[in-house]
Length: 107
Image (cartoon, rainbow, N blue to C red; front, side, top):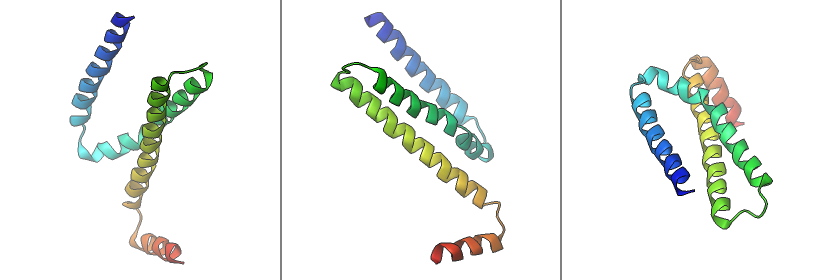
């Protein structure tokens, strides 16, 4: 049991290092499209946490806390990704379209 836990923690730590190394080499012009493209992955995290929580019989408080944190962070990632995508797409709108959107929001 403890060897499996240690193996899982080692995989988590190594994947963090690999993820940091890969993301740090991505140019700034590609970073935003990549982030917006990963919204589906974060949605899968949220769905997986909800399904896991729903299928467990009598989960301990520790497991409930971990799954709740996974749902909250996954949801924040999905929402943040959509906000970033909206801002990125706003950069490609013309000045007339931005002014019209601001006018609609003011009404």
